[in-house]
Image (cartoon, rainbow, N blue to C red; front, side, top):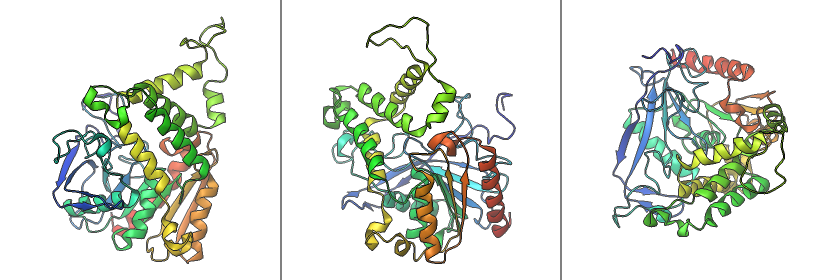
Length: 384
């Protein structure tokens, strides 16, 4: 292993692929004849298959949650702060699994996959998928891996929503639910942000009603703008002020609206947008934001979240961050109250951090401490 790989890293990892040929009935009423899930694993599954942890990714994430790929030895997986030897999801104890969600663009079947009925890429014809659909596919992946019950299902943001849905849909298959920086449903403001991002993509001249692949094009400008908008919402005002302030690239003002970058924050956002275009698919972005919008488990119980959680069996760890205005602590409070109203077991932590919504990705000491302490409880229960 290269000296560049930290000793508490899972090291070099290779994605794996599971093919499922059984048709999948989707919540939308449509059906996929079969599909592939890309996934990675870290650690070793014990003989009893009792030490498995499912990690669920957020909107722009994928299955590469920890360690390094051979083609990028500098950038670790998106949750590398929490997965690895001695980290909260300690791979000396746990077998950690993370899959790319159905509809994704990093190896799982999605809009950039071939439609077996036409021989062309699915593109805009890929069916809408929801959080409930992802739980179905993850359950099948667990069966494929010989895992009857997850010791815990964990995730932040949209990943936390999946953990919540797992506790509702398959209470007998989950030991603990770890819901970080998430919500039981999106606020109107969040839906509005997602809609502006989608319109930025759809109004790009190269979008071509989602069939841009046929023309060999990419709606780069629209997707870049969507990512720039999203990134603003993932940070806090304090974090942006601390990192960029009103610093300029030069002392001379342009007094114009051309493409020249004047402020450092402009440079940062443009870089984030441009790099995102090279690694993400526009149709996938539309699907993922809609899945966020549709998520509302209490809708099936007339808006009563406690009733929706009535059959939950697993204890919960719910965590929020003080500066997260995308999914603020109040959204976590709603989940905690609903669990307590039905006498469920829940631990809640509100972490003081100025990183905004992205705090769940960061090595915030108090966050890691609480997460590790809770996972010690999980480890004790499964005897690892």
